[in-house]
Every structure is written in structure tokens, then in C-alpha cells.
Image (cartoon, rainbow, N blue to C red; front, side):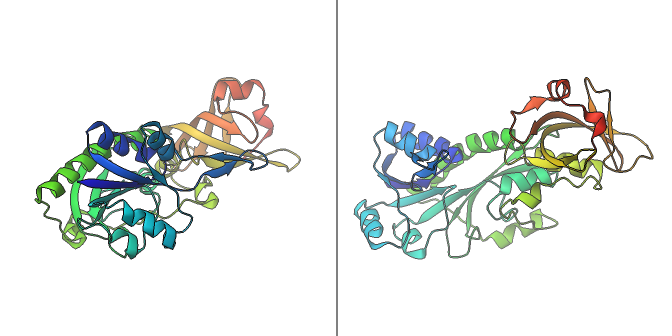
Length: 317
């Protein structure tokens, strides 16, 4: 069975590696064009998927537009029986409908929950205690095709997006192989997503994360702020502003915190610190202890390191 693989970021590398090391016939890889990086945008950075594909000698296609006739001709010439999509982009029907066995996608949630661009972030932001991966056949509407397989994983209260991402990446690679074997054996019994609606009390979307999404509202309850921060760590990171006595502001990213439930009568956002070893922020329901921070233009650091060079008592949030 000839396979064309489509993906771009690190998350997609693990499944491609599993296919290659499992001896599957991957006849081509489709990924995003190289991205300009650097101060003058003069250096082109290949995607992680391209880097891996080239390291094992796989042909790589990098179309600017997925409906481009030259690309479609190249794709058709690969004569794939099956296409696999992991963290790529929305495909036009002319692409996903090309191979005789169809095209399936690996999505980092338990569909139909968390359809969209950022399922891992939103599952953690909402304080979910489990998530998972789903393989499904592509159709015209994004993330709505019939489900082939799903696999659950737990989310611990101390997990952040980084740890959940890595767990889903590994679990997803295994699910991709299971799905390929089902398709090869002709044993797929894909079900409509509507049959899974009873699994969830509320369907939540997973839209793209924007800068305003990441701003911390210190008037929210303790658990909600805690989940927002870990749901955005390590990337793109939750942020707030430190306001100096003269009214100037500095952006402060927050990566790691601890919850301390307690009664108090302090205004939300009040900073409590010994100036040496800890920073607590008063919020509804207790205090959020900040553990890992980053000032704009600086490196990420521990609170103790941060306090060595920053006179925090003069500032407010």
C-alpha cells in the first residue's frame, strides 16, 4: 500500500517516523514551504517534517497553494493508495478525494470534542482530566468526518501543554499505525461523529490562540487562572503586565504556578512577596504562586532568579 504523508510541525514527525521504521511504503511527503526566519527574514527554515523526511530519503512536496495544477500533477504521479494528514492544513476535496482508500487525519482530541486549530491548549485551559487522539476520514467540513479510532489519555493537574503534547504525539503515532492496518485489512467500521455526542455534556471548540486569549485576568477564580497558564505553557505563554510607580508597563510571561487555596480580603492581582524567594498573587479563592517567569527581552527564569534583579514591591499588576 502506497502512502503519502502530510504534516508540518514536530507533532507530525513522530507518526511519520513510526510509518518509516515500521516498514510502510511512504512514497512522498507534503509539508509547508520553508519559513523565512532571522532578523532580516533572509534564512529559510524547513519544517520539522521536511527535515526528517529528507534525512531518510523521502521525496518532499512543498506547495504554496494546494489547488495548484503543478502540485496536483506531482501528487497524482505518486499513485498513493492512502493519504495521512497530521497537523497540516485544510485540504481541498481534489486532494483528499484523490487516493482510492481515502485520506485520514490524526486529530489531537477526542472528537467531536475540541474541533479546531488548538485542541491541546483548550483541553488544558478548560481543566479537562482526560483527552486523546482520533483518526477520522476527511470530508469537506473541518474535523467532522467519520471516526475510525480513538484513544484516551489522562491529564494530570500538574500537566501543561508541553507534557500533554508529547503524550498525545506518542499515542497518536501508535494510533496511526493501527488505523493503517485496519484500512489495509478492509476492516474499518467508521462511525459518524454524531454517535459520540452522548460522551460529552458540552461540545467545546478549539479555535486558534491569539494574543488576547493569553492575557491573564486576575479577577478570575484561582483554578481558572491556573489552568489558563498551564494551558498556554510553554507556548505561546500566558502574560500579564507589571505596572511601575511611574505608570510604565512591562510584559511578563508566566509559565508555571502553584495553587494555594485560602481566605483573604485582598484585591485581585495584589502582589505578595518577600522580595527574595516567592511571589504570590491574590485572586478569588486564594493565592497563585508564580514559579517560572519571563520579562520581555529576557530569558525564562525561576522566581528566585527574577527577584535578584527586580525590585518587585514597587510594582503592581
